[in-house]
Amino acid sequence: MNFIERIFQICTLNNDKIDPDSDNFYNAIIFNFFSFMALILLIVFISVNVYLKNSYLFIILASLFIAITINLVLFWKKYNSILASTILSALLSIFLLWLLYSGIVNNQGVILITLFPVLNIYLLGKKRGNIFSLIFFALSGIAILLPRIFSFQLVFSLTNQVLFVLLYFVFLIFLNIQEKISKLRFETIQSKIKKAKQETLAKEEFISKISHQIRTPLNNLVVVTNIVNNFDLDEKQKDLIDTIQASTNNLVNVVNNIAEISNVDLLQSKDYNQNFNLEVTVKNTIDLFHEENSDDLQFPVEISEDINFMVFGDPVKIKQVYLNLIETILKKTKAGKKTIDIKIKKLSESNNIVEILFNFSTVDMEQVSEITKILNTEKNKKDRNAAIAKLLECTIGMRIIETLGGSVDFNLSPYIFECNFILKFKKGESLIIKKEESKEFALPEIKSEGKVNLKDSNILLVEDNLINQKIVLLSLKKTVNSVEVANNGKEALDKFGSAKFDVILMDIQMPIMNGIVTTKKIRSIEKSTNTRTPIIAITANALLGDKEECLAAGMDDYISKPFQIETLITKMEQQLA
Image 1 (tube, rainbow, N blue to C red):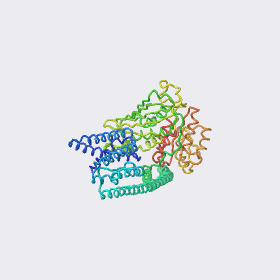
Image 2: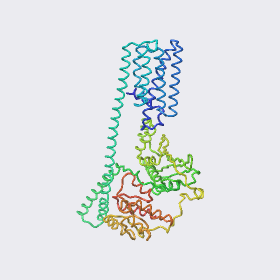
Image 3: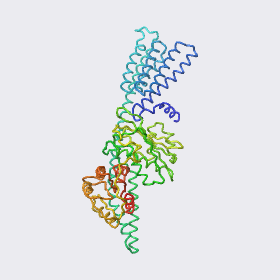
Image 4: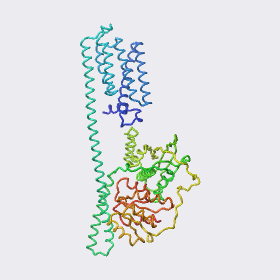
């Protein structure tokens, strides 16, 4: 088995630039195998003829050896397996026909020629292989079946002539049947894969709906239990409440586990292509992590000075990528102070299209033994990067990059971890403010009226569920100055335009207008006033990628149901500060 594996590895040499999911990849393996086998056989026969001092046959064999080698080298440069396979088949056909017509092949050698359809069909495929095989049969049949008519020196016996015809067509028919069986098997497997994907999608949608439906009432249980627990209760009542609270917490853990193993595809969301400042988008996203651990976390950002223009693309997806990749790296870094270097560099520009390299690197990454195993076993670059992305749990960022036309490349060594990806953008207008004159985050100055205390704050609660409204109002009535309620996104926009709020608590799934769209419209309105109202997402959506989508839409923080009211109050205080 190890011997076969070694041969297979040799046949996959220089195939890194070929998509492993394409037919060209498998054709390249077969082409490499037949080329190597032909070269090995030629070396043997060349050596024999050198020993026998047969210079004439030596020249012919050496010429064929050089021709096959050149064809192999050209294939490794161009990766055109169809052309290379056709040339190899033609070279071997001409050589075998020369052996026949020159009289070098004896009666036993004719039997070996019947194997030629095997090479043709495997190299060229069913249709082209059949055509080549029939042409070769006609040309070789003249020398084998009709030697007396054309006065050839070598005359084959009737037995060998019959065997040649029978075996040639037996091999040809067998290979066509085998090809048909392989095609039917492939179609069956494809059908099963398609059915499995549909079943998986249905399960994911079911889990998403169930998770959302469970989280909303579960949140009410958590909040109400905490409120009741603060009342003056006797010992028996306190014990009952504690039992409810413990059971609720266990149920919270179960729901969270469901969310962790689910992976709802968010990549089909609407594109928000527009002209945007790449530096501002990246630095604002990074700033979210500064607020969480400003003392222990550093993000040195290096953006090449030649990116002095706007780019046309989707800033929301760029934010999602940065959120996902940075969170992934932070999960795998060592405890204590850590640094993640971020570099953005323009690689090329052609016809108003710019190619930009994005780089993440850190020396604080924990050495993951599984990564070393992947590097040693996965020789194909694409498979290696996909395996590392899955291990590091950053498949969402990787898939978003792929939808934008790029691909992620991971580089690891004992000293540094690097993540690179390249994206193309349409070049927008030049930035009016020069980089050296701009502020650190290149943001317009936001009007500030000083710090607002939580007890003096006015809150806008955007929530369509009446029970949820009552729970939040009950929880916050003694903590804040006032809470205004909007039943949907449209009503929230109306209230936002007619009154000033210090914090907005935004539900996501609502009728008429959902929380994502509402947030985008609020941020669009604020551009003309140079103000910014903190928006905290309060949602029952807690599956993989929901947080990234909320933050990328312009929200300042995110909390999933069920939550402790103290956590919500802490997040509100952080935003007001």
